[in-house]
Picture 1 (cartoon, helix red, strand yellow):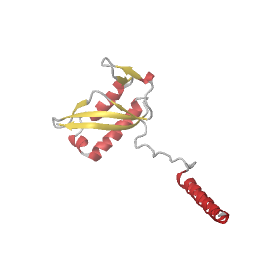
Picture 2: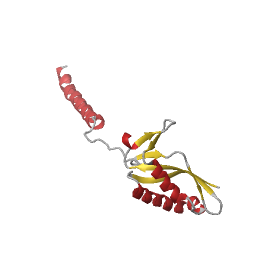
Picture 3: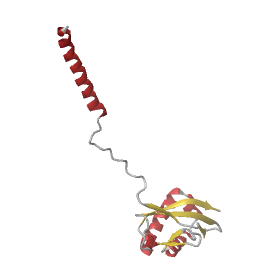
Amino acid sequence: MMKNKLVLLPVVLLVLVGAGGAYWFKFKPSGHVKKPPPPHVEGSLFALSPEFVVNLTDNHYGKVTVALLLKEEPAPAQLVATSEGAEKLIQDPVVRSTITDDLTGIATAELIDHNRRDALRKQILKDLEKATDIEVTGVLFTDVVVQ
């Protein structure tokens, strides 16, 4: 009887050590923390309101809704409340004037063709960098209608 216990004891210890090792390698949280993937959009999106309605060539007009991708969220000192309770950038009149100037009188193809529209957004970005103190990193046309 004593001999059976002596044989059984190493087997039980071996099973316990094996189970502990399996737990250690399989379930123990590692010190390596997986980093989240980088965001697809870096910065803060700020939609301009209302949309822009501009005259295009050949008696057409375009209606464009624009959002700005800002380097960071605007500080409260950079915003002003509207009568509707929304917020606008303090430099909103300069921003709107710059965008309106860039959109007015362009050919309808500038808004319809993807590549031309991309070039137009880059031009607006460049002009906003010159005309304002706002750190704009991108210009997005969220809605485009040409008639």
